[in-house]
Image (cartoon, rainbow, N blue to C red; front, top):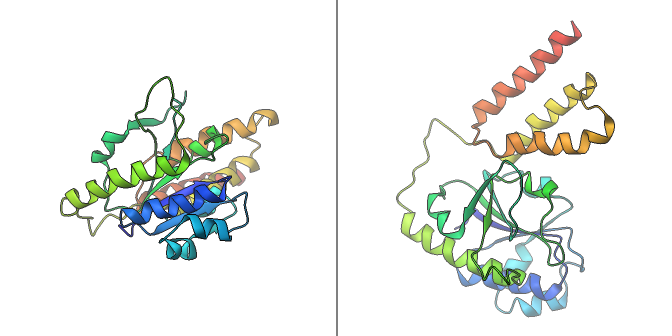
Length: 237
Protein backbone atom coordinates (compact mmCIF):
# COMPACT_ATOMS: atom_id res chain seq x y z
CA UNK A 1 0.00 0.00 0.00
CA UNK A 2 2.85 2.40 0.82
CA UNK A 3 4.18 2.28 -2.76
CA UNK A 4 0.93 3.70 -4.19
CA UNK A 5 0.38 7.46 -4.36
CA UNK A 6 -2.60 9.63 -5.25
CA UNK A 7 -1.77 12.98 -6.89
CA UNK A 8 -4.21 15.89 -7.16
CA UNK A 9 -3.25 18.34 -9.91
CA UNK A 10 -4.28 21.94 -9.14
CA UNK A 11 -7.32 21.11 -6.94
CA UNK A 12 -9.74 24.00 -6.60
CA UNK A 13 -11.72 23.30 -3.43
CA UNK A 14 -10.59 22.69 0.14
CA UNK A 15 -13.51 20.32 0.72
CA UNK A 16 -12.40 18.07 -2.12
CA UNK A 17 -8.83 17.87 -0.88
CA UNK A 18 -10.01 16.86 2.58
CA UNK A 19 -12.50 14.35 1.17
CA UNK A 20 -9.77 12.79 -1.00
CA UNK A 21 -7.57 12.31 2.07
CA UNK A 22 -10.45 10.62 3.84
CA UNK A 23 -11.15 8.46 0.77
CA UNK A 24 -7.65 7.03 0.50
CA UNK A 25 -7.42 6.34 4.24
CA UNK A 26 -10.70 4.40 4.01
CA UNK A 27 -8.76 1.84 1.96
CA UNK A 28 -5.46 1.87 3.89
CA UNK A 29 -3.51 4.23 1.63
CA UNK A 30 -1.54 7.11 3.12
CA UNK A 31 0.32 8.85 0.30
CA UNK A 32 -1.38 11.97 -1.02
CA UNK A 33 0.35 14.66 -3.07
CA UNK A 34 -1.03 18.03 -4.15
CA UNK A 35 0.27 20.12 -7.04
CA UNK A 36 -0.23 23.90 -6.96
CA UNK A 37 -3.52 23.89 -5.00
CA UNK A 38 -5.76 26.93 -5.33
CA UNK A 39 -6.63 27.16 -1.60
CA UNK A 40 -3.99 27.67 1.08
CA UNK A 41 -2.67 24.27 2.10
CA UNK A 42 -3.35 23.10 4.68
CA UNK A 43 -6.30 25.02 6.09
CA UNK A 44 -9.04 24.38 8.64
CA UNK A 45 -11.63 23.38 6.03
CA UNK A 46 -9.31 20.78 4.51
CA UNK A 47 -8.60 19.27 7.92
CA UNK A 48 -12.28 19.35 8.90
CA UNK A 49 -13.47 17.54 5.76
CA UNK A 50 -10.70 14.96 6.05
CA UNK A 51 -12.47 13.87 9.29
CA UNK A 52 -10.27 11.07 10.70
CA UNK A 53 -7.56 11.38 8.06
CA UNK A 54 -5.73 14.34 9.58
CA UNK A 55 -2.39 12.53 9.42
CA UNK A 56 -2.79 12.04 5.65
CA UNK A 57 -3.07 15.83 5.32
CA UNK A 58 -0.13 16.38 7.67
CA UNK A 59 2.05 14.02 5.62
CA UNK A 60 0.77 15.27 2.27
CA UNK A 61 3.47 16.79 0.07
CA UNK A 62 2.81 19.93 -1.94
CA UNK A 63 4.63 20.46 -5.25
CA UNK A 64 4.91 23.39 -7.61
CA UNK A 65 4.69 21.27 -10.76
CA UNK A 66 3.98 17.79 -12.04
CA UNK A 67 7.59 16.88 -12.82
CA UNK A 68 8.60 17.34 -9.20
CA UNK A 69 5.67 15.25 -7.96
CA UNK A 70 6.50 12.18 -10.06
CA UNK A 71 10.30 12.04 -9.70
CA UNK A 72 10.21 8.81 -7.69
CA UNK A 73 7.30 7.21 -9.53
CA UNK A 74 7.81 4.13 -11.71
CA UNK A 75 4.41 4.05 -13.41
CA UNK A 76 1.95 6.94 -13.71
CA UNK A 77 -1.74 6.44 -14.50
CA UNK A 78 -3.65 9.58 -15.48
CA UNK A 79 -7.41 9.54 -14.95
CA UNK A 80 -9.51 11.15 -17.65
CA UNK A 81 -13.11 11.02 -18.79
CA UNK A 82 -12.07 12.04 -22.32
CA UNK A 83 -10.43 9.94 -25.00
CA UNK A 84 -7.16 11.55 -26.09
CA UNK A 85 -6.17 11.57 -29.72
CA UNK A 86 -2.61 10.66 -28.80
CA UNK A 87 -0.45 7.57 -29.10
CA UNK A 88 -0.87 6.58 -25.47
CA UNK A 89 -2.37 3.45 -23.98
CA UNK A 90 -5.93 3.79 -22.66
CA UNK A 91 -7.26 1.40 -20.02
CA UNK A 92 -10.53 0.89 -18.21
CA UNK A 93 -10.83 0.52 -14.46
CA UNK A 94 -11.08 -3.27 -14.70
CA UNK A 95 -7.76 -3.39 -16.58
CA UNK A 96 -5.90 -2.42 -13.40
CA UNK A 97 -5.58 -6.18 -12.92
CA UNK A 98 -2.71 -6.01 -15.46
CA UNK A 99 -0.69 -3.46 -13.48
CA UNK A 100 2.42 -4.60 -11.60
CA UNK A 101 1.78 -3.23 -8.12
CA UNK A 102 5.27 -4.12 -6.96
CA UNK A 103 6.33 -0.90 -8.70
CA UNK A 104 5.86 2.61 -7.35
CA UNK A 105 2.48 3.49 -8.84
CA UNK A 106 0.82 6.90 -8.87
CA UNK A 107 -2.69 7.89 -9.92
CA UNK A 108 -3.04 11.43 -11.27
CA UNK A 109 -6.32 13.34 -10.99
CA UNK A 110 -7.01 16.64 -12.73
CA UNK A 111 -8.59 19.79 -11.31
CA UNK A 112 -12.32 20.01 -10.83
CA UNK A 113 -12.60 22.80 -13.39
CA UNK A 114 -10.70 21.43 -16.36
CA UNK A 115 -9.28 17.97 -15.65
CA UNK A 116 -5.89 17.16 -17.18
CA UNK A 117 -4.47 18.83 -20.29
CA UNK A 118 -2.56 16.98 -23.00
CA UNK A 119 0.61 18.59 -21.67
CA UNK A 120 0.05 16.81 -18.35
CA UNK A 121 -1.10 13.56 -19.93
CA UNK A 122 2.27 13.14 -21.72
CA UNK A 123 3.95 12.29 -18.40
CA UNK A 124 1.69 9.26 -17.94
CA UNK A 125 2.34 5.68 -18.96
CA UNK A 126 -1.36 5.32 -19.69
CA UNK A 127 -4.70 7.01 -19.18
CA UNK A 128 -7.59 5.40 -17.35
CA UNK A 129 -11.31 5.97 -17.56
CA UNK A 130 -13.82 5.20 -14.84
CA UNK A 131 -16.90 3.65 -16.47
CA UNK A 132 -19.89 5.96 -16.02
CA UNK A 133 -23.12 6.92 -17.72
CA UNK A 134 -21.91 7.95 -21.24
CA UNK A 135 -24.37 10.83 -21.16
CA UNK A 136 -23.18 12.06 -17.75
CA UNK A 137 -19.47 11.37 -17.26
CA UNK A 138 -18.69 14.11 -14.76
CA UNK A 139 -17.53 12.78 -11.38
CA UNK A 140 -16.67 14.72 -8.25
CA UNK A 141 -12.91 14.62 -7.60
CA UNK A 142 -13.20 12.78 -4.28
CA UNK A 143 -15.67 10.30 -5.80
CA UNK A 144 -13.14 9.46 -8.52
CA UNK A 145 -10.42 8.99 -5.91
CA UNK A 146 -12.49 6.71 -3.69
CA UNK A 147 -13.56 4.51 -6.63
CA UNK A 148 -9.95 4.02 -7.72
CA UNK A 149 -8.75 3.52 -4.13
CA UNK A 150 -11.33 0.79 -3.48
CA UNK A 151 -10.51 -1.12 -6.67
CA UNK A 152 -6.76 -0.85 -6.18
CA UNK A 153 -7.01 -1.89 -2.53
CA UNK A 154 -8.85 -5.05 -3.53
CA UNK A 155 -6.32 -5.85 -6.27
CA UNK A 156 -3.29 -5.30 -4.06
CA UNK A 157 -4.65 -7.68 -1.43
CA UNK A 158 -5.43 -10.23 -4.12
CA UNK A 159 -2.13 -9.96 -6.00
CA UNK A 160 0.28 -9.18 -3.17
CA UNK A 161 2.14 -12.46 -3.58
CA UNK A 162 1.88 -12.65 -7.38
CA UNK A 163 4.53 -10.08 -8.25
CA UNK A 164 8.18 -10.27 -7.28
CA UNK A 165 10.61 -7.66 -8.47
CA UNK A 166 13.68 -9.01 -10.19
CA UNK A 167 16.81 -8.31 -8.21
CA UNK A 168 18.72 -7.74 -11.45
CA UNK A 169 16.41 -5.31 -13.22
CA UNK A 170 15.33 -2.06 -11.60
CA UNK A 171 12.72 0.10 -13.27
CA UNK A 172 13.67 3.66 -14.07
CA UNK A 173 11.96 6.23 -11.91
CA UNK A 174 10.35 9.30 -13.40
CA UNK A 175 13.36 11.23 -12.07
CA UNK A 176 15.71 9.03 -14.13
CA UNK A 177 13.58 9.53 -17.22
CA UNK A 178 13.33 13.28 -16.67
CA UNK A 179 17.13 13.57 -16.46
CA UNK A 180 17.50 11.59 -19.67
CA UNK A 181 14.89 13.72 -21.48
CA UNK A 182 16.47 16.96 -20.25
CA UNK A 183 19.83 15.80 -21.60
CA UNK A 184 18.25 14.93 -24.95
CA UNK A 185 16.47 18.30 -25.15
CA UNK A 186 19.66 20.16 -24.21
CA UNK A 187 21.57 18.62 -27.11
CA UNK A 188 18.68 19.04 -29.54
CA UNK A 189 18.49 22.74 -28.67
CA UNK A 190 22.23 23.02 -29.26
CA UNK A 191 21.81 21.89 -32.87
CA UNK A 192 18.71 24.07 -33.35
CA UNK A 193 16.47 21.04 -33.80
CA UNK A 194 13.26 22.70 -32.65
CA UNK A 195 12.16 24.73 -35.64
CA UNK A 196 10.07 26.52 -36.45
CA UNK A 197 10.02 27.89 -32.89
CA UNK A 198 6.22 28.09 -32.72
CA UNK A 199 6.08 24.30 -33.03
CA UNK A 200 8.57 23.68 -30.22
CA UNK A 201 5.97 23.22 -27.41
CA UNK A 202 4.14 20.53 -29.40
CA UNK A 203 7.42 18.86 -30.38
CA UNK A 204 8.50 18.77 -26.73
CA UNK A 205 5.12 17.36 -25.72
CA UNK A 206 5.42 14.54 -28.25
CA UNK A 207 9.05 13.83 -27.32
CA UNK A 208 8.20 13.53 -23.62
CA UNK A 209 5.23 11.32 -24.44
CA UNK A 210 7.48 8.85 -26.29
CA UNK A 211 9.82 8.35 -23.34
CA UNK A 212 7.35 8.51 -20.45
CA UNK A 213 5.13 5.75 -21.76
CA UNK A 214 8.08 3.37 -22.26
CA UNK A 215 8.76 0.88 -19.46
CA UNK A 216 12.47 1.67 -19.24
CA UNK A 217 14.92 0.23 -16.74
CA UNK A 218 17.58 2.30 -14.97
CA UNK A 219 20.21 0.66 -17.16
CA UNK A 220 18.31 1.55 -20.34
CA UNK A 221 18.02 5.22 -19.33
CA UNK A 222 21.77 5.32 -18.65
CA UNK A 223 22.45 3.78 -22.06
CA UNK A 224 20.20 6.29 -23.82
CA UNK A 225 21.78 9.18 -21.92
CA UNK A 226 25.21 7.96 -23.05
CA UNK A 227 23.95 7.72 -26.63
CA UNK A 228 22.66 11.32 -26.55
CA UNK A 229 25.89 12.58 -25.01
CA UNK A 230 28.03 10.68 -27.56
CA UNK A 231 26.00 11.97 -30.50
CA UNK A 232 26.36 15.52 -29.22
CA UNK A 233 30.13 15.07 -28.85
CA UNK A 234 30.33 13.63 -32.36
CA UNK A 235 28.42 16.61 -33.72
CA UNK A 236 30.71 19.11 -31.99
CA UNK A 237 33.82 17.28 -33.27
